[in-house]
Length: 292
Image 1 (cartoon, rainbow, N blue to C red):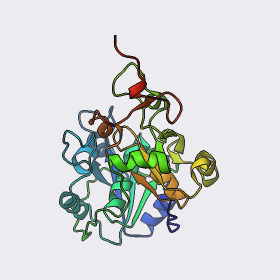
Image 2 (image 1 turned 90 degrees about the horizontal axis):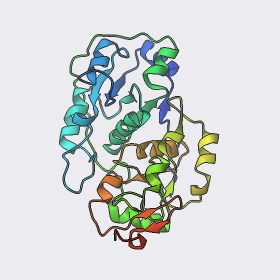
Image 3 (image 1 turned 90 degrees about the vertical axis):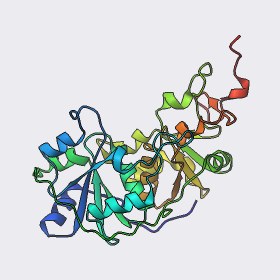
């Protein structure tokens, strides 16, 4: 596990409001994915958003082409992402604040993707839109025109794990499964359920309280068993919730690698082992009772 320089990975609504009032060059991105926002996720954005915020479609802007082995949310192509960053007005030295309306993991995946692409200063907004409203922040209906940013994408600025590396890390270091506990346990009678043998369960939702990242003391206690200096990695169902783990550990100065394909990619190869049960190893696929 490699310590990383102390760097702010979050910001509060109050600090963001102060920065916007001062005229600071902050790029605010609202990431839309959640259901219940009308026919298109951007409908709620158009009805009222943070002043100057630009809308980012999770599926269109942050996910690349899917293949038979890519998993549900593969990384976007570098060239397309660079074009988008520039249209959002992002320069190499920009401060970017990302938020969403419901699920923090949607915003943390945006945080991770931009950091992976080389944008140095990206921050998760505590509480998202609700946090902004709690401080009496005004909403705007004006849609900013396309920006003219100059950001240059540098893929690989955050570490990744391949499936093989994730499997090895589960045995040699700390591989954290960020899915809900039920998904981690799986069902020994259902093919494709369970977890990577050796992975430990810490649901991504445990990193937050009311959409706000928990404080350093709470996160240190949550991850205490995995802060011994060995390498840390994270995965989930499709490479989204696990970015909450990467963000949480980054806030503690700990660098964790992401397995972007996560479980949805792991199970595309029937030769990869699967464990079920509440323990890191549990019962492997080879030990499952036969259908007969």
